[in-house]
Image (cartoon, rainbow, N blue to C red; front, top):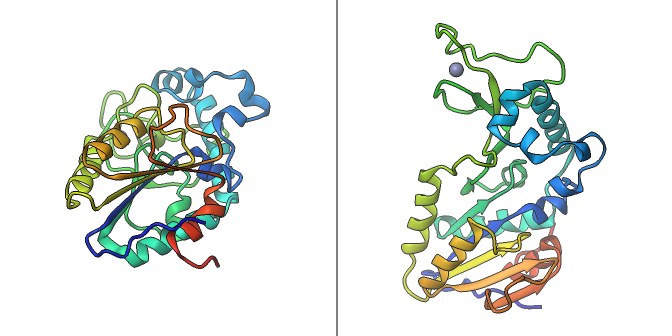
Length: 251
Ligand SMILES: [Zn+2]
């Protein structure tokens, strides 16, 4: 089994995780969802337009996602990432496309959630900061924002996730860039897991990493669509591969 050499105190590790990492904890990917959601399109439940058009449907969908997230537990891959962060400190950054909060529950602290957090909510109108919210809104009336009630049209409470057609926070992208650029040349390791790595923003990150002469790794169940896109490819579950790859003891 291969092990990443992270012993040089100048080496920095950036890890990008995608849906595959959460699927190992039983979180269904959108494509794998059953029942009611098979009959609804992504435009209906995962865009701002869809939510404003039918917020009750949107909240039923996201309430179910909250139930799934709260019922799931971090897996060995999440735990190994928290362990390697413990060892590397500020030389480590975790970037995730997942919205379930499982990385934080495993103990990760240096986490950028590119697509927001399912267990937070925000307002559709005012700029109050997202707030922790694991409530289920499966029945009417739907929650209204209590901060902007003096407006002619007060906002509604919505999940603090980034929907299709919405932009990823510029500050998050800048933090990723800054972390990668601060690594001395030849001392950056970029690892993508549970994602094909070929769709933005993952593909943009790996391009940047390569420009910075980083070592690039992919851990995924399926082989990459672009052969040679990553220098090193390990096929398998992150929960099975990470503990040995990072040299951390499981459990
Ligand atoms: Zn508001």
